[in-house]
Length: 76
Image (cartoon, rainbow, N blue to C red; front, side, top):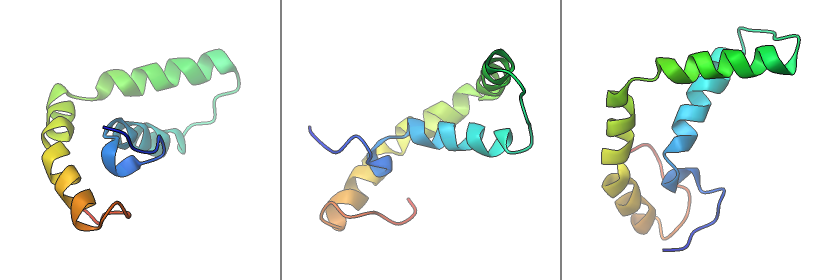
């Protein structure tokens, strides 16, 4: 199945990166190593249940994308 790489509707990992990005707004790492460490720490805080919910949301995401004929879907 092909879709644009920028399709956040069909890319659940994007939700995890958004979570990390929001948490990063409260931190100001001064080095690349510190930035990497902070990201790894945030990543380790993500619960398996969160990943499961994102995976389970794929049928709804696909149906929503089909419903809007490939346009940007609303909330799932």
